[in-house]
Amino acid sequence: MEIRVLKYFLAVAREENITRAAESLNITQPTLSRQLMQLEEELKVQLFIRSKSKIVLTDKGMLLRRMAEEIVGLAEKTENEFSNYEDIIAGEIFIGSGETNSMHSLAKVMKDFHDLYPQVQYNLYSANADDIKEKIDKGLIDIGLLTEPVDISKYDFVRLKEKEVWGVLMRKDDVLASKDYVTADDLIDKPLISSRRGMIQNEIFNWFGKNYDKLNIISTYNLVLNASVMVEEGLGYAFSLENLINVNDETNICFKPIFPKVETGTVIVWKKHQIFSSATTKFIEEIKSAFKEK
Image (cartoon, rainbow, N blue to C red; front, side, top):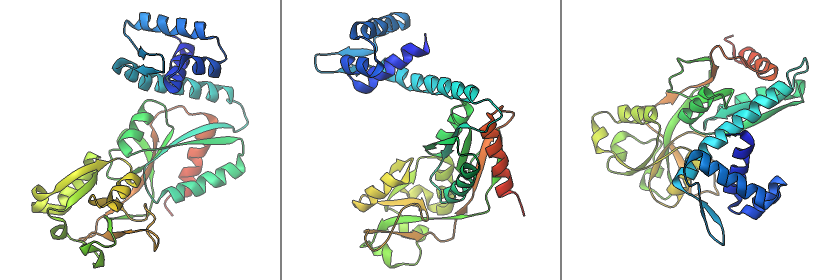
């Protein structure tokens, strides 16, 4: 299976049309059709459902799409690193970040580093800690900014000093919105929207204590922006870190900290014993310097 053919497959999956995909790849339609048929024969599965109007992926096709995106991404990342393997600091750095206000601190380091090495480009991937760790393990991401609690035993890391406060997003017209903070008793039997990360859910369960079995979690999320929309539409209350969602006079949602207070930290991680590009190696040195203990 060639990388080139996987790129052909991804183009068709993206365009859902052989003609448009062929045009985007600058090859003829018969050539592209033949390559796709050979790919299906090689894998011994049907990848597409073909109709006059468009092409749709089968279940096997969707599985291949996810794997092909990772394979092609890793191949392109490898090519870029070797093409820039010179004395000059240049190339791409792949960074994964969870939703955290500490991104401001990392962004300042990125800005300073780019001022020194303007030929460096950043590729930022936003997801939760579990997704970012998976991509670090596969070599698709160099550096991750993760919200604790998180298992970082496999990584080298620096821990940021800032702590972030957990609370609940709710509508401003909610009965709890007049309070300075909310307690576990306030949220018993209320419709709750929680992070899907197991470690975060455990933190919430521990905060609820003996009342955890009375939780009414109606939905989970991996990024809180969409959860805030659900809150805005009156679906429930979303657990969130403070300052992740813009709440002001023009929005109809607000943030209330929980009591007893729950704080969390953040860490910047990278894979142990990994050989990085010169740009990424230099950037990690910059991170260590910026966040070293005073």
